[in-house]
Length: 263
Image (cartoon, rainbow, N blue to C red; front, side, top):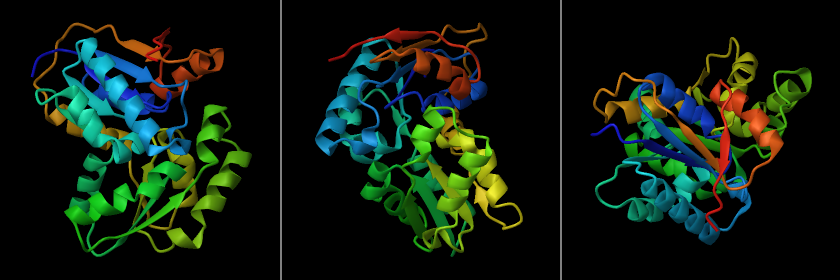
């Protein structure tokens, strides 16, 4: 595989957690990121709309020269994978945030209950139970929508007592009882991983680092990358100052957003 850019997209800037994990794993690889901030959250959109947005964004990333596509959006990955693969074409591999995590869980757990939290859109598709049980039918997958978490994180309300109360309230729900591991089924959620782990302290529940699992899957398919530091590009479909300010939280360093209105 060449040193051509890796294209990554999400409904907003939450997918920057995946981009950051890939950047750490492949520091010499250029990334081109697209956050569809004009249409977030995808979890509230119709499947037809999500397929349309995902197809167009994939086309845009291919037009930018990307030779690998990473769908850093659980909702798009669960609804639009066929459209994304068709837009990328047969020569460009596509990755998503569901398959590598499902494979990891299938290999590391057996005859146990696995919890998944995510947006309403992701949970409604039951994508995680379907793919996980394809890898390991012995696993029982418990899913629950946690719709307050994304806006809470977007507004910077985490790592405090209020957010801990909301997180604890969700995790204490009976639907997530007796699990051995929890999948953070939204790319925003790595930012609250420490708070989730705080709730499970002493309860012998593994909180999976999903962004790193995805990054490892992408890196495993690529040859060693270039030594020279790359220039990453970050696009959004609608710019706001709050998104610009939040990018440091998700990517770990200050980045400059460019606007690309694909519609």
